[in-house]
Image (cartoon, rainbow, N blue to C red; front, side):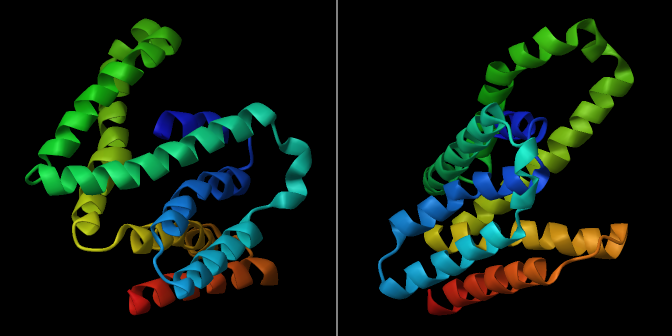
Length: 200
């Protein structure tokens, strides 16, 4: 999932890559919905994601990048479903630990092929460990606990808060200006997440 997303980021503007990747969690939300009101929250979250993406930068769009983002979205949908199942079958983070070991075996050849012996430098290993902890181990452990306590469709919609949080962090920490369309996107996403949580 992360490898595909990073490959998409290398070829697409981040907003477009994130919006395409979010088709995965929204697909889970639609597939798991049991009531008509759930579709309203999914539609609101989807509208928010579409509004927050910089579609005007279409000249920078790469079909290969779109393909990688779609693969990342499909992997994310599978991650939500499989994490929920693993959380029920394995105690604590046992299932997650096993999945991380398998992913290292699967992804390591890609890193070794592109990085070669540079990967053995101590500072590269330390940065790699930090990135692994902050981008995978810690967030996935927290998400696993969340998936044990809430329905999958609610989790999928709540995940749509990520683009909104990124926009707010950009505003506060980087001084990035948000347009009316981006604020409308944030309102849609927050409303969808609150609505899904309240009606669940």
